[in-house]
Image (cartoon, rainbow, N blue to C red):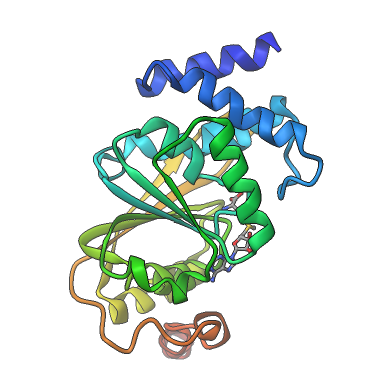
Length: 245
Ligand SMILES: C[S@@+](CC[C@H](N)C(=O)[O-])C[C@H]1O[C@@H](n2cnc3c(N)ncnc32)[C@H](O)[C@@H]1O
């Protein structure tokens, strides 16, 4: 598939990836295309090269990501953005944390087919992953949850100074207000919202970067499920709404 190979070659050049990356990224696309039960609706390589590979690699423009040694990709699904980042950063260790065991099976098989040896597949909920607590340089998350909920998952896992990078679409003032209030309770601060254009047709994409600037209080992580059930910051946001009315 010449066109797809050309896009992969362009990604390798654009991001200055290691020599092995071209074949490894191709192997990730093949893993998706060859498994009709792959846990994603985007399996055709002509689409997946943008939606999964280019979109994952766009975060390499952040020096926190390109310099990271320990990355945790929460809610990894079929392995994105974690697997392409593992290809790009062979010196880093990438934990892909995914609560559904069947999806973990796919991730492990895809990683093996690409010859990746710097990947750990963690079949747990992010809130329950005790081994990761306080150890992670960069937490990544795409299409996982509202930003405030992702912040709550990420904060206890990050070392101080580490960053959460969350892939999001069009900006949403309510979501961002709730996330900022949640961040405040978690020892995180919103650092940057970076517009990105990883592939043709990827409109309104943004990377949200939140840095851990203080210890996360001991009451986190809350019990699995609580972050979604009783989101932090929702009260603060609604009382600020009331004040503005
Ligand atoms: C919509 S998928 C996104 C997958 C992938 N990140 C992507 O962008 O292609 C969200 C994934 O997060 C997983 N998930 C949801 N809550 C989770 C949690 N608390 N801990 C770990 N995984 C979770 C789900 O099982 C699902 O596979």
